[in-house]
Image (tube, rainbow, N blue to C red; front, side):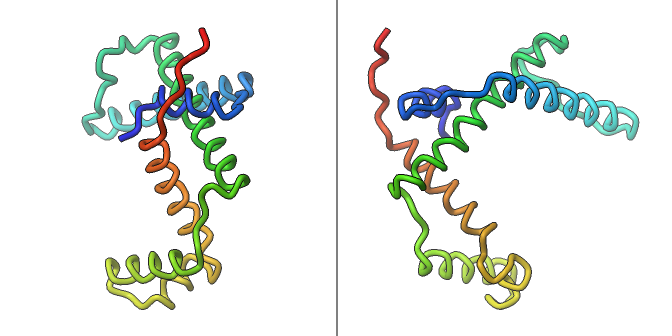
Length: 147
């Protein structure tokens, strides 16, 4: 799996400038959602996994989720950048092949997959692009920092 730090570094090398206010809003939202899921699990008597190696203070949770939000923003930016520069794309044939694979896994027809996901298969296209981007990031050699 690709490490988040590598995603951020590659994104920055490609010109990514994060909107820090948006990153902070997303991080606080992630904190709230995590705390709500944890409280709900406790209320339902279900075990909820703790954050490994993190003392669960609001500050520590925010720092953790801020990094996660930054990684997500960087990843989205890389996908958009590679798509815009036509370095990665999804051909109609690839999309059709993936729809057939989904149909086989779910034991339905390709037409049923298209009916569920829409004839243009945009959700499937996004999934394929994310997988291709992760593969590209995994193969990408990071340039040495100029620091």
